[in-house]
Amino acid sequence: MRILNHIRRLSDDGGQGWLLDVRCPCGRAGWIPPAQLAAQVGWDTPLHTLQPRLRCTACGAKGLTIAAIAAPRARGIPKNPH
Image 1 (cartoon, rainbow, N blue to C red):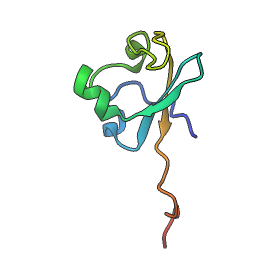
Image 2 (tube, rainbow, N blue to C red):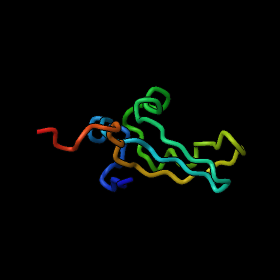
Image 3 (cartoon, rainbow, N blue to C red):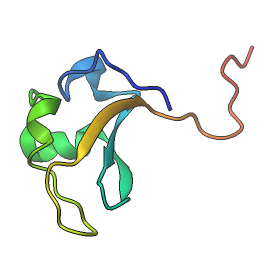
């Protein structure tokens, strides 16, 4: 999992090729596509403003840790097919 530090807003890199890694202190973790969040808060929303708004689905805690990560490739697809 490669963290993308240059991603600052949901619209960065066109919202393609990366996911938002969300983790809670209770141990729950998951990936959210940028388009899913943009439908609710808008594409120009900075990532640092999302952190206090997100809530854990398991324990209900707020203030989850978030990071933009490179989207994993599907299994069996080589990096350079040629």
